[in-house]
Amino acid sequence: MRATVMYSAGDVRIENIPDATIVHPTDAVIRITRACICGSDLWPYNELEPTETGRRMGHEAIGVVEAVGASVRTVKRGDVVVMPFAYSDGTCTFCDEGLQTSCIHGSFFGTGGEAGGAQAEALRIPQADGTLFVLPVSADDALMPSLLTLSDVMGTGHHAVRAKVGPGRRVAVVGDGAVGLCGVIAARRLGAEQIIILGRHPDRIKLAKAFGATDVVSERGEEAVERVRALTSGFGVHSVLECVGTDQAMRTAIGIVRPGGAVGRVGVPHYDAVPASGQMFYNNITVSGGPAPVRAYIAELLPDVRDGKIEPGRVFDRVIGLDQVPDGYRAMNEREAIKVMVKP
Image (cartoon, rainbow, N blue to C red; front, top):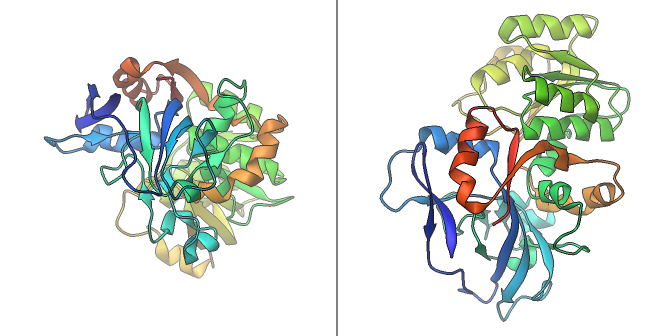
């Protein structure tokens, strides 16, 4: 079978690798029908040190179950399933608490570990019962783009709004990538009164407004902080969704949240310590977040997707085949595309 393998920064190849097969009785094998390139994939695309064995890429997918292990009970051959970016057993103490990304028998797809990558023709799914979510649709359903976002970006945006977002609240979203745009959807879904998007790419800003953003701030650094405060009577917002993961993004988030407010950080952090911790302490600011347990959110978000109340699939602005994945990485890295869907 063919799969995406990254050997170093910028070196993405489509290679023939051994077919996905059942290894453990708790496994399933799915034929990938939809996958995508994530903004977090761009970190290794720019930073990965050379490796002889390569790293199989991709952690978001929808597929059709081709085979199941002897112990699998909740999915069967022929089911259309969404695959969250982390696999989990669904039974450990953290899964019971809705924190599948901390499952004691789990880990993440596309990181070079036991599980392979989803930018491929097929994939072995460890802990299939706790990981896969069966979709009540056909494999060619018109809602596939939005359903695919439930594997990561829509669930991640939803995870960020746990930072005290609610009716009548003022919210700022730092980052205009797919996660930030889904954060706008999530904030509007929970009734936020004001949603400020911090970004500067016209196509993304247009989509953010369509999703419910009320204000746009294109400045950066202290200028961005001043602009947001000017839009919020000088106090700042109740909640910030930090969807980038850089030191500057977190400094901005701390600078624009009002005393007693909250920051939900879902951008993979590329800093060793949370900046502006003194300001965070003295203003009683709550900072929370992490890798979203999207498996816990699918059942809640799925009805709104199926009813058309939210349309997160609009973040996909390019569809490619598997052979075009290397160029898809280039396009996203150069901001020519918001998010690229892959149809193997």
